[in-house]
Image (cartoon, rainbow, N blue to C red):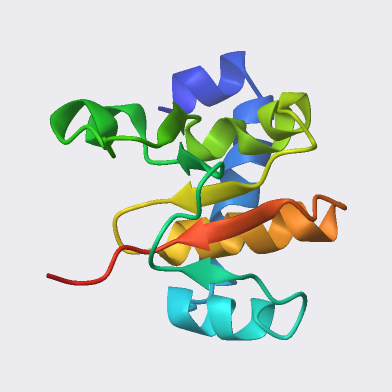
Length: 130
């Protein structure tokens, strides 16, 4: 290890930065983040999809592959959560979009952030538990 550090002194700086980040880390529950975000802009959560609305499956592609989301008679678009910010502006602004994920946590967070960026045509689809 010392040999590598002598060859690449910037590794010492990177290790120091990582050590500091680990020392100063803090654990935050996702529920606390949502509670904090809920004070921002309210997001509509629906349990039934109105005619004409588009469901946006924001799950990771691996999850979507394992358990594809389909709703007969409704349009479903797949945009992974990590691409939402860049791809959502490309969608038709005249349509209403409902974000979907398995538990509803990620869809609520992303819907709130999209609303903060000025996208008023976004909500959350949360199917009723069966």
